[in-house]
Each structure stands twice: as structure tokens, then as C-alpha cells.
Image (cartoon, rainbow, N blue to C red; front, side, top):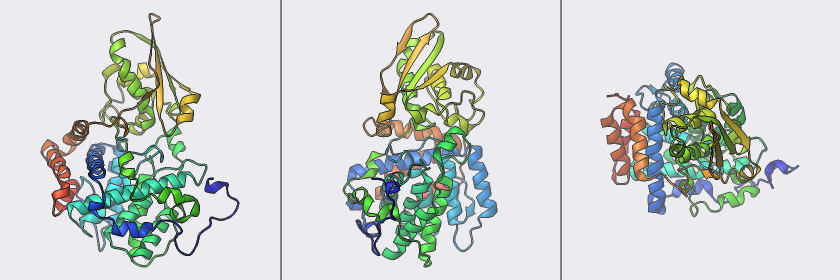
Length: 458
């Protein structure tokens, strides 16, 4: 039963009723995590850094970074913004980093949360680590995993608590607060208050509003990062905010009792293309039939998918945000060119061939595919050629899910493709090498410096 179905108030006690989350945050060690968990963490870390570099090209990132520089002074403690180098407040740096990653919809995510943890966890970790508390490579990776484990479970619990589908900022703020609690060495009560404040202030914004009317607000990550980091800093000074109901309520017990046994880090998907994940099953289906229809004039393209994906309707996106929340546009680009990359949703917005084909893409909702969502996100394509021939696929899932992971080579190539043009090939390769050996680094500072320094394109 969801929390929202109860008439009475949540049953909370003076002390947490579930597993000791605050204690777990402070006590987890690098060696408590299996090599498989660490491998997934390294892959997501590299992927997110690449998306941050690629996001520098967006107007969204530019606006938020300039805003932070103008209005979020460093004060007593500061941090550099990712691939920017300017020093601002720690929450301001986290906010700017989250906006930069979120501006290019290519970052990792989790099916059951219908959203993204890393978009906030990495910028929060980078901001807290720059001046306030640098650490070893193993500790850096441990904090990174802690953020994911807390954020994803909070997301599952929050989605069970209300009918409305809210953005990731509502729950990845809690993960950022957990990272802050670990980095600032908060005690158990301070950690509880940090998590509670982050939950209370987290932006429970309407995700489907941004789907229907795409703008730069995206998935709420910008303020999720700010809220999470601020909550930890406030708790360190004695600010109270406990309890976090999504953690301590009795109805969320099953979500938290496997903490440290089931690793949500292993359940992340990595995106091959920089658009909404809901569009990617249809893109995968388009890629599957592309060779079969090569050179043949297309009359119509019918996409059968789930309800949420069918709301990705723009055919003529005029900006990056609308292109990333479109299904017809990237499907048309995939059919024409066999790939969709950062250039497609930035420099390629005015391609007349893509727009012409996107007009012929029709979206329909399949009840069977709709019922399977969000555990499974599938789409089926039917292509009607001008000569009357029909080419179709079965129900297809996108590459990158845990069951169909991108190869390590795919992840590195995606990183280099996104980062190289923005920060230079040498810096990109250096970062990739450091991420690969982060577990042996006695100091994480070289990696932090490389990611927080202004990029120098070749």
C-alpha cells in the first residue's frame, strides 16, 4: 500500500524504525563493495564526466554556470564548477554541475525510479571534495556509491508515496545529502537531519509537465543538487530536519532492509544516445531495420510504445531541450544516419531531411507495452514504404540496460566522443586513465582537478 493511500499520518517513532541508514553511510568501507559494484561505479563515473563535458555546449549549462558565478559567491568555503574553473559556493558548484549534466540527456539512470541519481551525486561529490574534504581514490568511489544506494532507494520510496510523477531532484537530493554527511563526517543525528532536510526541501516538481512543455528545468537535478549539499552543510551547523519519511516510515522497510546486500549501483542503465530514455527503445528498433530499408522511400513510420513515451511528440524541435524530449526527431535521425549524438541535438536541429521524416512518424500506445512499464521499456516499429512494402520489428528494448549493457569499449568511446571536442583529447584521455585506476590512487585530487579545471578544446 502506498503512503498516499493511508488516511492517517505516517507511523513514525522518535528513532528510525528501519535499518540504520545513517550508521551505514558513515561505516561503509571500500572493501565492503564487491569488484562488480566497483566496476559499475567506475563505468558510471566515467560516463557522467563525459556527459558533463558534452553539456558545456548547451545554453542551459552556460546560463546556470554564469548565474552561479554572479550570485553564489564562494564565501568561507568554495568549489570550482565542473570543466569551468570559476570558484563559487559549494552548493552553487554542485548546482551548476548538475545543470550541465542534466542539460545533455545522456546520463545514467534507474528503471524503477524512472529517473537519475548520478546527475546530482557526481557534482555534489566534486563540489564537496574540491576544497572542503579531498580524499583517496577508494574513498571517493565509496562516497560515489553511497550516493547512488541512498538516492535510488529514496526514489523508489518517494514514487510509492504519491500519485504524481515527480522529477529526480525530489529524491537524488537525499543521495547528495548522504554524500555530504559522509564527506563532512556528520554523526548519526546530524546525518538524519541532513537526509530529512533534503527530503523536505527537495523539488517535487512535475516531470510530465517538462515532457509536455520541454524547457531547461529538465529533471529537477539543478536544485536537487543545491538542496542536498545545502542540507548537509546546514546539518553540520546544527540545523534540524529529521525524519526523512521515505527512509524511516514503516511502510518503506522492505526498500531499505537490503542496504549493503542488494546493490542498486549494479542496476543502472547507461545511455548510448543523448535523448530521453523513453525514446530509445524506438530508436533501437529503428537501428535494427535501418539496413533493410536503406535507400527505399518511406511513406509512414508507426511507433507502438508505452504511454509516457507517446507524449514525446515534437517533430520540429527548435532547441536542445525539445529535441531531447522528442521521439519522432531522434527516430527519424536514426533511420537516416544510423546514429544520434550530441551534435544531433545541438548543431543538427535544422536538418531538413530529419524534420521531413519526423513528420511521418506516428505514435500509438500499446496496452501490453504500457502495462510492462517501468520495469520494461519497449517499443515496436512498423515502417510502410512508398511501394507498399511493410517492414516491422518485434517489441524492442534499448541497449544499455543491465541485461544488455554497453561494453567497456562502448563506454570509453562515448566518453571520448563527448569530452574530446570540449576539453581536448589529451585531458579526456588523462581523465579516462585516472578513472580506470581510481582504486589505486592515494589522492583523488588529480582527478578532481582535471574535472574542475576549464577545458581546453583542441
